[in-house]
Amino acid sequence: MNEKVDSQKLSSATGGGVPLTYVIALVPVASVLNVIGGTVAGALKLPIFLDMIGTAVVAMTIGPWWGSLVGVITNLTMGFITGPVSIPFAACNVVGALVWGYGTRWGWANDKVRFFGLSVASAVCVSLMAAPIVIFVFGGATGHSSDILTAGILASGAGMWQSVFSSNIIVSAADKILSSFLALAIIGALPKNLQVTGPIMAQEDMGKAVLITAGTVVGVILTVVSMTLL
Image 1 (cartoon, rainbow, N blue to C red):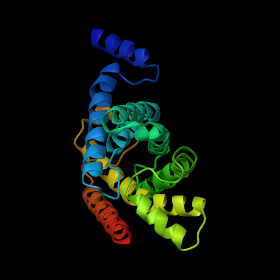
Image 2: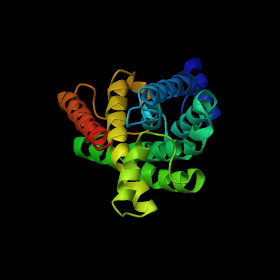
Image 3: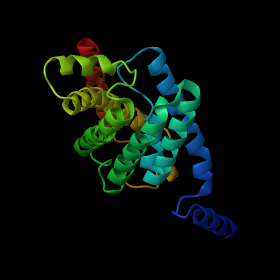
């Protein structure tokens, strides 16, 4: 009885029916995972970001707004580590969290085909948010390796908006598909009672392993294509 009461108190403390212990356990770890991924991608000059895997894990398990918190913490931390360029892109991390989190609530994480669609949707929405930031805040270039692709598209005669969005969606598609399926693999290793946002594919479903593999392969292929273009 006491355990039930304590659980209800914890849930009320978070304001969203999520036990506070889940938040304390996942949010810091997910933020660190994002920072490590983003730092490694930047150090290796990869044409992807890898700074939203933890965001996807939290958004799909305990909710989109907790995922948004992870995103904000990530970009603020990256701002101190690698410079202020990362800070405005906290908005992109928040958008990704909302797409993954609400997509999960609507059942898009419980079906193989729809989950792939959710991964693509996150890439498109994040790119729609990123393009104005790149153009208005940074004048079209941020120092990321994708700037070379933007320059190439500009040289072909395209306008600034088309060039920035095109290069961003190519890179983002690879990044978000990889992030989505790596997040799904991490979620599969977590206790089921952490998955409170919405239905996620059953751990015992063998098709899930095929899904993760196929999604990762597609993401890697898109990454290779991006690197070739760069």
